Length: 176
Image 1: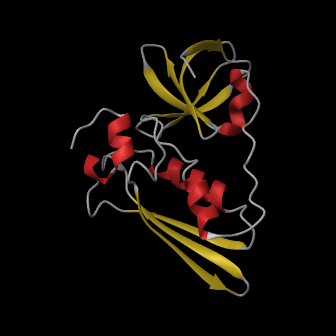
Image 2: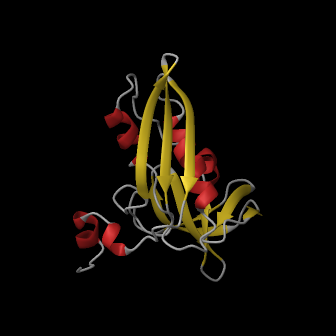
């Protein structure tokens, strides 16, 4: 999506990037949509401050909420497919290809599945950890037979650009 200027159609909750602070922008506030991936939107406001608009608030930007993909059967592939719909709000790459997901453990219990995710952030001071954790829980929770989703953000080992997939490094113009 090319950058687009819109005025909010209603008051809207936004998350400041990278601090993670919640703000309310007033109806009529002009914003520039810089990224629309995985159902959420990254916008700039005022003097270029980055903010994230959740998929639930897409209508405030004049859009319909993103449709969830069909997840009629549980599988490890379905889990990874859903994880690939969670995007870093500053970099137009999903968290899997970005190398933020360190592990995904699926265990069966009482006819259901528990999913444990260990992930990192691109920088230890990034306040978006809780936002991305929530995105993961919202994407994996509706999968059939999922009983529990646990997401742990760790900083050891520290994330480096070398953890990105080769295709992602090429897409971003990084030569490692």
